[in-house]
Image 1 (cartoon, rainbow, N blue to C red):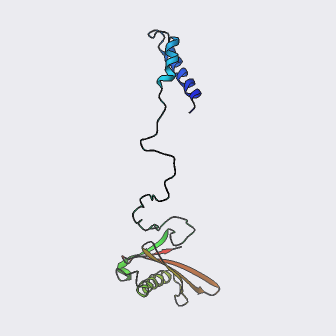
Image 2: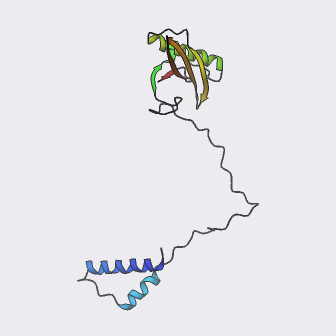
Image 3: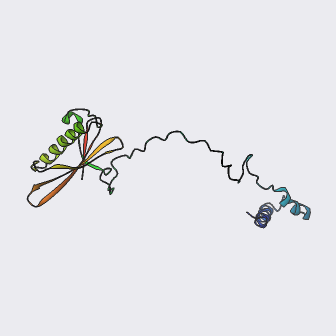
Length: 171
């Protein structure tokens, strides 16, 4: 804020106060108006604040190791199917309990169980499905399967496998 703007604001405030309380207040004198801008102190920077660049040898303290970013699944209508909202959940008790997602073979077998349960529940044959893509994402393992359950109609099924053993099917 420039000094001119401050003076204008202080004068406007003085006129406003005088207008609200004309009966009780004495009219401001010229000495009071002249002293008002002097009384308003300029804001001062905090102690130790500087705009100078740090010396080349001085390094600011580095932050501690950042926690890994975990992308939460189930974001409705997201373009990335790895985090899109699930359309079905298969409980761990049906698939055989908790699974070690770090072991790719075990988690892949778990994902195939979930896939077969979902596709057979739709009344489609499961023989043509194969794993097309797999990735470990933010604490769970994501799989994309493709199959041709009906002549001329391909079908993608996306499955997320969690360490607690449950699996989610994504549209």
